[in-house]
Image (cartoon, rainbow, N blue to C red; front, side, top):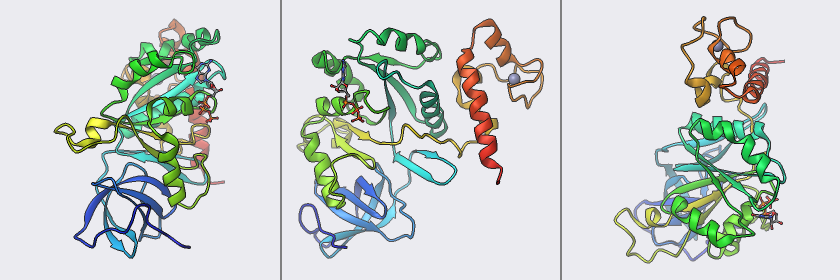
Length: 323
Ligand SMILES: Nc1nc2c(ncn2[C@@H]2O[C@H](COP(=O)(O)OP(=O)(O)OP(=O)(O)O)[C@@H](O)[C@H]2O)c(=O)[nH]1
Ligand SMILES: [Zn+2]
């Protein structure tokens, strides 16, 4: 397969650091400190790099070879029966986009939040399409999430883009945010609003990866705001600018990497009650003297979340049993 550099050959020099802005199998697009983008390949058998990774690289003809992966702060992943997929690494935040139309799935939301909690990444919810009547029901369904301390932002990206921009720019600026959400919720609208030349940014990456597609098939890095000019703040251009990573995969969010016994520790409303059950190894499903089930009875914990928890438990338990 022919590989080529995106913006000219790298100068031969000592191993430099770069940021992974696109990845497809063993092919990655890296962005060097000066903004130059190169197609690189990793040496390992497995594709170890994901978007958001920082790597050390060496020139290899007019391409680059990834020689090493710098330690990750975190990694958000999902895992089904067959495979593990990584969304991105080194995230400051997960932004889950939801809407009333199409009505979001609470199961998908819960899975994303559990995975983020497991990876140690703060999650923020964004309810979009608030100009539509269905937003009222969506807002209601999000009450337990607000009650457990999550920030729920509200926008009408299409109907009132300027208000949305004013609200979101301070939240996203200076941070690396992974954006996840079901199709039709407004992810593209969000990216087009906040990312200058979004089409060009993604086009450059997919062209380099030779995918020839402009639809998102893997995670893609988008710089926010203006191109860094070198006089960025003392934390460096990335910190001054912030970035969004767009990832597919919200729809099939497997949690097979999490044991059922850990689920409750990754759900803030359940976690707050742990220790109150009669049995130290309570599964919070059928045991007498369960503090979480008592809270469901009294209405302090959402019955729907408890139902979804039971379903997830069964899924993770079965998934771990071969055959
Ligand atoms: N009423 C209303 N419609 C919106 C809003 N934001 C986006 N839309 C519309 O919703 C539809 C889906 O928006 P997209 O931005 O394409 O959604 P997406 O999440 O990227 O969807 P996929 O491309 O399928 O992944 C489009 O027709 C948008 O114009 C909003 O705030 N209010
Ligand atoms: Zn219990």
